[in-house]
Image (cartoon, rainbow, N blue to C red; front, side, top):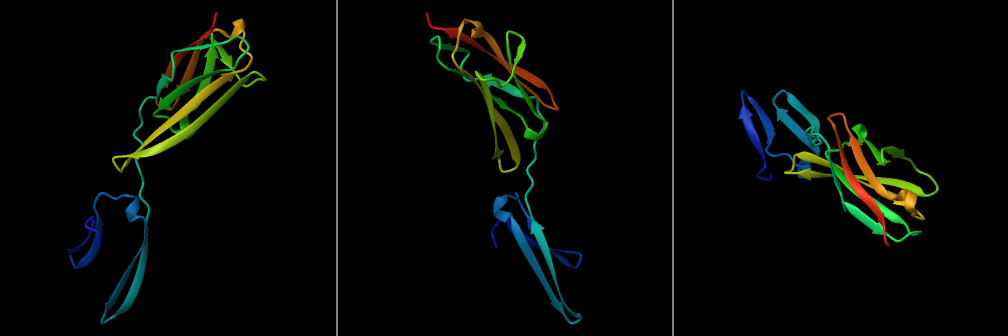
Amino acid sequence: MPPSIKQVRSRGSLDLVFKKVSMMHRGIYTCHAVNRLGKDTHFVIVIPIYFSIPRPPRVVPLHHVVTVSKGSTAVLVCSAKHTPQRYTALFWNHLGTRVTNTARHHIKSRYSERIVKKKYKDERVDMSLSIGHVGFKDVGLYTCGVVTDVGRHVGHVELRIKE
């Protein structure tokens, strides 16, 4: 038996105690009991659950200024943490106007999560805005934003055209 699992006798019963549960403990555990009155078998399924501590989102642009040639494609990227996918709305604005998917604008997002200290979920999203055939009407300040059930945060990226 691994050192993180031990049997404990308490008030006439025998308990299986897990310390610092992790994915290695995941599985089906079987208890066989036999005594003079008969025998019995019980099964327990252990599925570790990780906690997600609600925190306000935090947006960070990959670059604060992106400079491209006229007519080329610009890709603006922001990353945000504390963004559980079920409770998160993403948006891009250009000079205060919402940007949506069009023939020249393509918005993508990719969610990911990792387990921190074997018990907490760190949920994040990477979001990008691709702008094709960049022209002078596309330059200016872009805002990448995240809204969750706990708060809202934005980042800013300036798009410039090379002279």
